[in-house]
Image 1 (tube, rainbow, N blue to C red):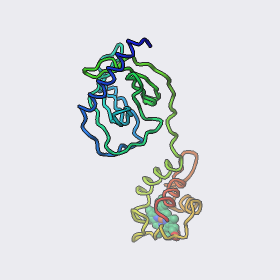
Image 2 (tube, protein in one colour; image 1 turned 135 degrees about the vertical axis):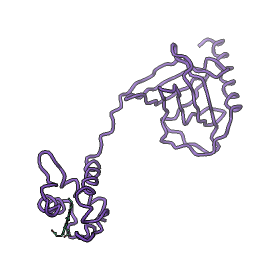
Image 3 (cartoon, rainbow, N blue to C red; image 1 turned 90 degrees about the vertical axis):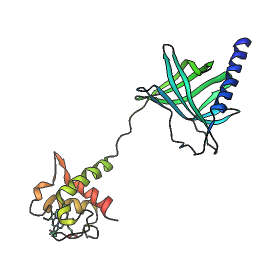
Image 4 (tube, rainbow, N blue to C red; image 1 turned 180 degrees about the vertical axis):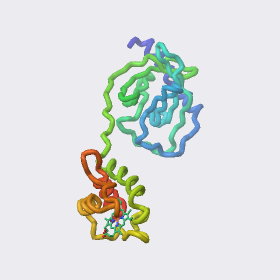
Length: 226
Ligand code: HEC
């Protein structure tokens, strides 16, 4: 970098810091460290919950897309945390010369790693967006047991609660399932598969197209019994 460019960048950077302090509403809450950077394409708002600004502190910054081509973001809000914030590898930071580094910005099913440079002090504007890396995010696979329990819960209220109570506590027509000798997933499953609901035992069976007995057994065992 040429020395004149560096001096300019440095000046802009200092203005940026002053700008932050002036905008400086102080934020008292400790930020949730899980909070990711987020870009809302509908509003063009880029939220950076944690930005480490050397010499200033850790801020929560909101930027808005102010120009499309080339992309520019204008700082809308910045609040300095007054409580200590632990930085992690998702925390954005301002680097030497006013480079805003964003290590992890989810956009759709991709995670971007970005650099932007401070290009205007008033209003504080970042541009020269540089994509450093793109990673595809595989959506978390839902836990099959949780899915089964959730399915079982709704089948239970539909087919069983009338006789056994909403929470398996037992009712006029059916005994308690909470304190029951049927207290493993398999004994429950077999009982349901073969004899329940009483007088209509074919309404809830395991077969090629249904996992009703297993789902309700999973629900009773994991949610009603302890
Ligand atoms: C019409 C009322 C009725 C409905 C509906 C019904 N049950 Fe029952 N259930 C009973 C009665 C009565 C018993 C006790 C007699 C028996 O074990 O067959 C019983 C017994 C059971 C038992 C054994 C409890 C024990 O400790 O002996 C289980 C487990 C059970 N039901 C689960 C279910 C499930 C799950 C459903 C829904 C798919 C269901 N029942 C629907 C009336 C009902």
